[in-house]
Length: 304
Ligand code: FES
Image (cartoon, rainbow, N blue to C red; front, side):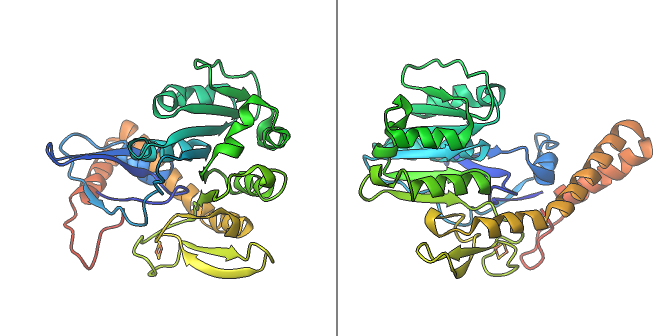
């Protein structure tokens, strides 16, 4: 099996840690889509070839405040970046946007270990039970949370004026809400030199930079709102927040939706068949063998 490091919408794998002395590479695999489903069936001893990482790493300021905001993919970014941000003397704030407390609770312990402060923004109550004095929970959704931050008297609003580097990773609609508030009501409170980037979760295919163009993302002029350029997101999935065209991103994500549903349905069918039909079991074994043992040649990589 060949694993490619992909961007969030189809992003299922992230490098977390490398220990050359032990010959170990630690990976974080998100349960999204077919690739992660296949990865969940790997057994010890299965041959895995890693390609990448492609793209560009997360920014690492020094002695600053790094705020990571968004949903599950923001957790992944935090896992990715926390050790190097800490090593560079940064303070780490996490703003987690989840539907309810149950989903937030699933990552709460990890986030507490990795960050200096966590602010939980839930779309519906009840609130998450907090375990650290500096943490906060807001249960009225992202819009109202950001509106409350603009009033600056809420105890959880301090991130607005202390953040040097914001990293957003959420659904396009939510990232657009953030951008609107940051360029409007929250703008007067932002720190000089404030920088914001967003994880562009556009579909990806080859990850080879300027080959398939699946990852194309449109940017707009932050002043006029007019299209300014197209970029290949596999060069760098973290792009300037104020230049992104989120409507275009949403459309790009939607165009692969049917194909992804079909792939998921086909894999479910194969895996269910594996449990119930001996003939299908053989077919699945042959298919799995083919995927995991296909010889790699540089000009014709097997599909991930
Ligand atoms: S994913 Fe193919 S060019 Fe970027």
